[in-house]
Image (cartoon, rainbow, N blue to C red):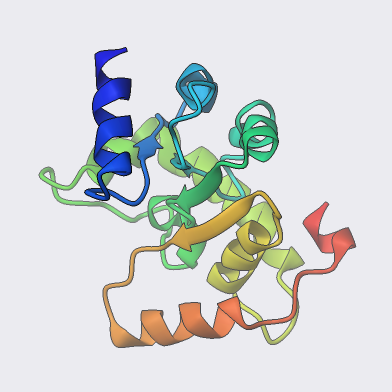
Length: 170
């Protein structure tokens, strides 16, 4: 409980405005015990069309405790940008070299191929990926990677877009 006392002191002294944690990809429910301390104001978790596990246990606890959810990796490390192909290869020093290794790239592209026909006319895969996350009332904000000004403009436009209809969401 030492860390809890230190955080409470820092908050009370005005040194910090809030406390956040980041939970791992495969077991987002691991942060639930920490959230139940009452000290945490926000939790950052991987959440996207392909990784919806936080909806099962983490999001209900966040809702119950009024903890903000920060969704990260909205484009599944790039697979939901619509730019990857089955032949995409990454340099050895890029973590995506392992993430999209032979055992993962094919199944990921199968999921992308299944999703692509559902993208409404006039929209794009990344737009739908972001709007999917923004449709979840448990999510306070999304932190997409943006390498180019056109990505920034597209993400801003998406945040102002009409919500996805319930049929497409399901």
